[in-house]
Structures are given as C-alpha cells and as structure tokens.
Length: 563
Image (cartoon, rainbow, N blue to C red; front, side):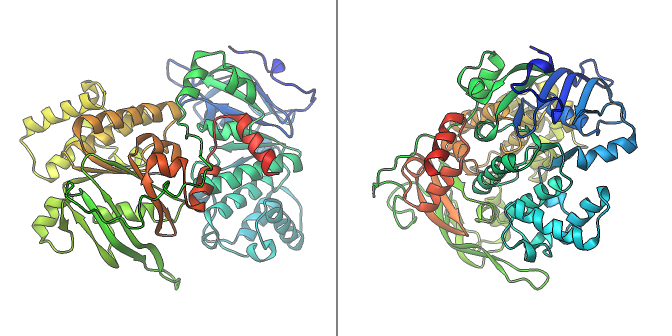
C-alpha cells in the first residue's frame, strides 16, 4: 500500500517538517533499497517508521538528511521544511543540516567528543550555523542543557562526557540536535543503547519537548513498545514500501496487514504486575546457597566481590559486592539490572575473564582459584559465550564453517572430517542451510549471524552458555525467532544458561529464575514469574514500571493516573 503523502496527514500544514513523496533509492542490486515510500511529519508531531532490517527505514532517514551513499540513485521528492533535499547542492545541504534537520544519534558514547567539554561541543554546533559571540554561545549552551533537563546546567556545561551518566550523555546529544532550532529531528533508535529506566526518562523528555519546540520528530525504531509510548502516527514499511499507516491507536488495536500483525505478535510482553503485598513473592530466600541433596550446580557464585581499578586518578569502582547465585543443570537463569549494575562483570567473572577481589566461583563443584592450569582449562571448556553483537564477534575473513570450527581447533577436538560433520550438525541445529558454510559474515543477515554465533558457542558441547544481551541488536521478529531457537536448543541439548539482559520481557520469556542486580548487589531473586509479577523490592518495581509496553492506551492511562 503506497498512498500519496497528501493522504498521510490529519492537519493542514503548508510547510510540514518532512514530506517524502514516492521516494525510490536504488543501488547496483536487482531489488531497490527503497521502492516507493511516501510520508509526512508535521511540526509538533512524532511519527514512527517501523519495519525489519532492510525494510528501508534508515535509508529513508539518510535521504532526509542528504547522506545517501555516493553510488545511490534517488528519485521522487524529499522536502525538509519545504526545501527539496534530493537535488540540493552540497552547500545547500550543509545549510539544511542543523537548521532544517538534525539527527539524534543512537550511541551517545560515540556521538560525543571525549576530548572536549559539553559546552565546547554545543558552542561549535551553534557557531557553525550562526553568527554568535562566544559569550552568547555559552549562554545558549546553558539554555539548551536546561531545556533537556540536565541538572545544574551552569556547572555541567564545563563537564567532559566521561563525567556524565549514560542518560545525561543522551540528553546532551538531544541538546546538540536542538541547537539551531531545526524543523525536523531524526531519531534513529535513540534509546537502544540505554537501559530500561534511562530509556523511560529519555522517552518522557521527548514527549515534553514535542510541546516546547516547533519541530517534528521522525522516530525510527524496532522497539514497538517505544512506538506505543510516544508516537502519534505510525508508518510500517516492508521491503522498501509502505504497507500500512495510521494513528498509533489504530495500528496497535486494529492492524489490517498481515506483516503489521506479525510484527506486533512477535513483541515479548510482560505479564501484569500484581500489586498485592505478598511476602511469599519475590525473593525465595535471603541467601542463595545451594543446599540439600540436589544436583551439583553447574556454577555456584559465593559471596563474590569484584573491584575495577580507577584510571586517571579516579576511585576504584565496586562492580560486584558480595554476590551469590547458582545455576543448576539444564536451568536458565536471568540476570537483570541497569547499566553499571554488574551484570556483564558477573558473566565475565563466571567465565574466568575478570579478577575477583573476594569470594569464590565453583564450576561443576570445583573452585576456579584452587585448581591447576590443566584443570582450569578443562573447566573453562564447559562454558561458552553468546555475544551481543555477532557482527563484531565473527572474524570477517572467516567463512561460517571456519568460525564454527575454530573452538574445536583451539581445543584440539576431532579430526578435520569429524569437525566438518560437526559443523553440518550445528548448521542443521540452528536451522541454517548447509550451503551457508562457505559464506562470509557480511553475506548474512543479523539474525543469521546470531545463529552462527550460537552454533559456534555450542560447538564444544558446553554445559553452560553465558548470553549477554544476545538479542538487543535484533529486530523484534528476528529476536522472536532467535529466542524460539534458543529455547528449542536448550530443551533438546539440556545445557544451562545465564541470560543477561536489560529487556525484562525477554528475560521473563526464557528464564526459570531471575536475579535483579543494583549497584553490584543482588536486591531480589526468585522464580521468573514471582519476581516479575510480584516483586518485593521497590527497585524491581521501578524497572518493571519503566518497561515500554506495546499498548498505547495502557501507557497513556498510566501517565494520566500519575499526573
């Protein structure tokens, strides 16, 4: 369905923030990246552009800011604040960027210059497009930090990025985008790199900004919970074409297209939190020592403390503080918490990749600090990691077969013929054609690369998989398929897993038990159902309340009740 842009607005606006009409973007491939996309974003409106990887979302945004690749051929029309972008000269594009359209980047850590203060970066953004004195630029920088609700802006304008929290860095990125009063803000996955509570703060900020600034926002995301939270209208794209559009309420309550229904069905949903004060809910006990005549845990973490040394004169950071947990054979244990809570350090500690300051870790009943080197090597082989980003973890020069076979080579397992047979078995197990064995990583989709990473981790038949944010980089439908595969393999092969994630809905879907970490300490643990539906700790409740839920009516009713 490719209605004209004129049919895609509800208010008369002679100069919309963005107007895309019959956009087509082609490369030297048989199928165009964008074949026919039309949409409109009015001022003071948030329009969400959703679809899987390869649907044309990001290419549409790049066309709006004049950053298509050199070898791309674009036809149709893209107007920002009434000015045509596709045929604009480089000089005109430089004027449009910043004043007409600005980008809110996904990763604030890489978007900000670590060697310059926040104020310097804001002043540069202002003076690039405006004739303004240094003093006035500084005053405006303070105003921008105040606009994005950074506390003590007069003081923090002189901070460097490393002195700010992740949420404050993202607020600075938004301030940079707002510096020159653009008509259009492009927000490409603006909260993907943030944990759930910080994400909630940024989404609330964007909603408040919509009423304060005279700009439209094009939100590009694969998180339909985020869309339900803040979007006014939704445009669904598939294979470079618009398949459905409408208000956020219509799209979520009455989707007409199978593809839209498929996307919505793939979203993991948390069960409703029970507000009843039940002392039996939440933490199963105050301690987590595995007792009794049950099986020996695959991993037992006993009163572990880990301290990261502070660089450049900074104080040491306590990453783990007296943490205890256990993972039994065949069990999936979820670990949740905000950034900096100690989740990743815990996983690395169990894998023997982080020095412990106190406590001990037992693998198959053996203390890692009390065994000799040969035993340690053997015990470490019982543990495998599933990475967050398979693109970065797979060697771009290795074929799929070579990547899967590498752990077998390192551990001297099997002959070359036996290894080849094992590769074929693993490709079958993760539902990839055996013909993929000769492909390179760049020839695979994100979901296919994650399947290869999973096959590689399973190659040595580990007893425990440590999966650190294994689906955070995937589209919602791809994520659903990978989670289904994970559950299928875990049931068939019987391995245990430590599933680390900030996505509580995903953790609830795959885990038997859950541990909640805050500032390096376990604040709550118990069965996944109890912890995530009847939490005892206020921190757990706050995490659950911050989760974007794929129901626009529910979030708006909740916000109205709080107001």
